[in-house]
Amino acid sequence: MEKLLTIEQLSELLQVKQATIYQWTHTGFIPHIKIGRLVRFRESDVLEWLKRRSIAGRGRYRVDVSLYPRGNVKN
Image 1: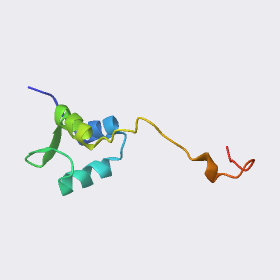
Image 2 (image 1 turned 120 degrees about the horizontal axis):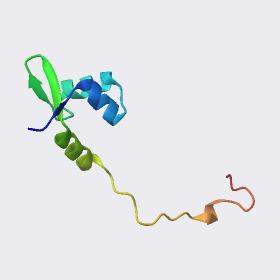
Image 3 (image 1 turned 90 degrees about the horizontal axis):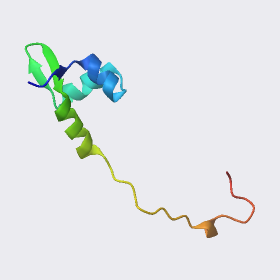
C-alpha cells in the first residue's frame, strides 16, 4: 500500500503554506482522503493532479523589436 502524506508533508513537498492545503482540501481543489477527522494525500494522486495542471511553454518566443525605439531598450 502506498504511504499517505500528511498536510505538513504535502505542504513541504509543494512549497506552500499549510493553510493553503487546508483551503484546497475544503474546496475539493486537490485530491485527498478523509480518515475520520484526518486528511491524507496519496503522493501519486497529487503528482497526477500537478501534471494535469501544468501548462506547456511555447516552442518559440518571438519579440517584435520594432516596438522599441532605438537606444531605449531597457535591460
